[in-house]
Figure 1 (cartoon, rainbow, N blue to C red):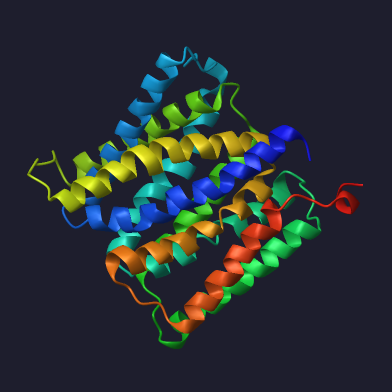
Figure 2 (figure 1 turned 45 degrees about the vertical axis):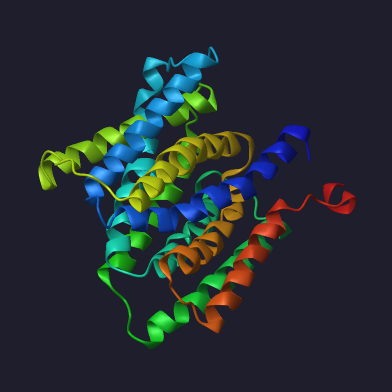
Length: 296
């Protein structure tokens, strides 16, 4: 594996931590902030943070005119739609369960990449898909047994499909700009789209004092999960095959469930923890460097 690919793989665990702990952070913030407002503010401020970083480091924010349609389309799919759908899904179900179902997206992305990008399904990807599917099945069985299918779960599934399709668009029609530039513009596109939804469904936001807990959750969501997280994501997806990058993020629901236990007092059952082990192993199967025999 080349050195750039190896460095990109090292970023995947960090991304898993940032996005994993974002699940309880968003749920905490949603107690005091309406969903459209939270997503509009989160994506907009995160985009502005990346804009300032680009200016401070001398990176160009220019995107070729012909590439704006693909930039907007991928931004709507993998940033705007994903974030808004997840916010409403979390209001309708347990955060740990929503996180688990949402992260079927690496499986969809890998299969879409096979169909539309002709990316091969090598042994490592097949192992990752198999372990991830097994883990998600184990975690989802209690929902089926208890008849716990809800609109929130449907929204989580829609979010996973939207993210996967956005990933494929990004790989099929890449934007010729630095990852920082792409992340900044896509977050602002997402913030604008969510802002339109806010004005239509919630009206002009009424600002009110927030508790310290909500401020901390909001700060984490904007700076670490959104600004830094999306910058890392676009850096990774630009250097790795779509399926490989997406399967690696299977560790996010494991971290999300752990965060739900620590910060939301949710109590997953024994079967849930077994499913999480399978998901972490699925991530490890694509992040551990290939042996010399595999590279030959």
